[in-house]
Length: 175
Image 1 (tube, helix red, strand yellow):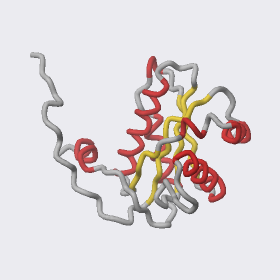
Image 2 (image 1 turned 180 degrees about the horizontal axis):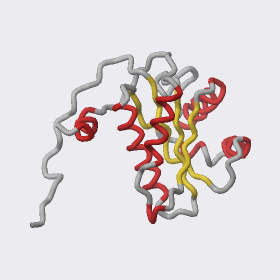
Image 3 (image 1 turned 90 degrees about the horizontal axis):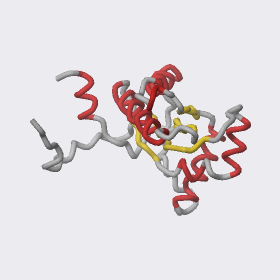
Image 4 (image 1 turned 30 degrees about the vertical axis):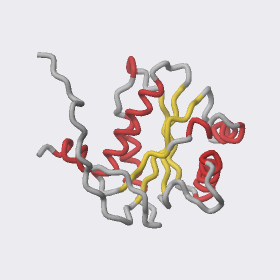
């Protein structure tokens, strides 16, 4: 089977990670894969923030936990040591779609490199807050950005489940 198709069919969301930070080179390759996602009119109006700093990770985890309504100590990122945050420029009308393609590329890249990943929501809500707008400014990111999602990344500390049976009638041919 073609390697790309195999990765598409075998990739699964990981919900338990080893406390080992992946090599920066691997994280850079994942982020770079996101740069090659298709974008409306070729605008490339997304940004990816690669978070490996423990304090920044904790800030994201705590905000996400609070938005999600979970109790103290819960980690909505399942212990993943790295978080890649995808944002889009709100002036781009295809931004949410473009950012979703970035996330998809990065999930497939992580799997192909032997890493686990999972898309974690609530980035939109986080980046609407003054604290996260300030964080972007502190990082030198100017403009009006909206969160698409977080990619939690690390080494899986579990077996990947088998793919569930695909629901029928999802492909329609017009010949």
